[in-house]
Image 1 (tube, helix red, strand yellow):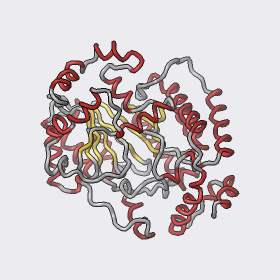
Image 2 (cartoon, helix red, strand yellow):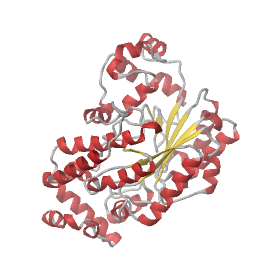
Image 3 (cartoon, one colour):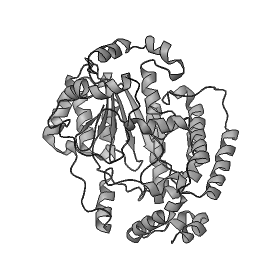
Image 4 (cartoon, helix red, strand yellow):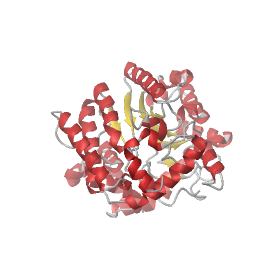
Length: 418
């Protein structure tokens, strides 16, 4: 399950975000224990799934399945031994079959406890990516308020309240069979709650049994955080980057590509030294999809997998489909060529994207998913004017220009009002 920035509980880290995140006062850290939410409040969702329904909250995963991109849905099934291609037989032998049966006969309730968490720590961040939101970046939130793009700043995160943070930490420590914690920000490495939770788990003597996952924006390094991380059973390290070119500076403002690559190399060395699972995390947009292969090249040379959580849907003017077909055709040709030049002996679809033994096949699979998406995604080039308008507002404050980084798009952007 998940705890969001505002302290609301959710059943899944991949659930569709349409409509924003409103505080659920019935299922919030201030009013409900995680165990009560997990065992009882999720009963309606369990019942729907057991009855074969397809909840709207799962739409992002269904979209990924459509384009042959490993979805969170399929990866969670794999964890409990269920394979979609052999559903009935694998379900019968799943480690959770008895738990499914229990929920089916008890109105969706369960006696299980939470073993896998996504912990959202708020929006404390030193970056202001052009595709990000105030919900995930304090720096961007301040800028948006200054530019009149929002009326208010997001409320403080739940973990900024020391009482709530201590309450959550105590729940974690008391939870049996706790196995995986994935943290998101903001920038996790500089978020005080991240370090406090890690320290508490180390001091409680249970870090050695827990896998920690987190994502960093490759602009910061903290030796004190590293000293805590190495005491955990395993670390899943995600490193966010969009291109290995100066375009990354524009999209992931105000980063600088030289220092980003230096930080990337440093995290990679640390991960390799401690046998961590490391990945490059990408969020391709209409501004960067044509330079995806620079990320794939780095990943291929360093035997690191590449993963994007889903196909970007919001903001709508950043969707890949905003690129007109003529430009998309060039990217399709580029991806086709890259895939042809990078082949492996592996066959079959990779569901477990965190298996280091198939990193290169997983890179090809990710590239193929974007090739499929570019080929069939709807044409949304009518949103170009919205994109240009938005970029011009940001640039008025940042004193930069997208044309410096994408001169090949000048005619396109000029035609849309740049």
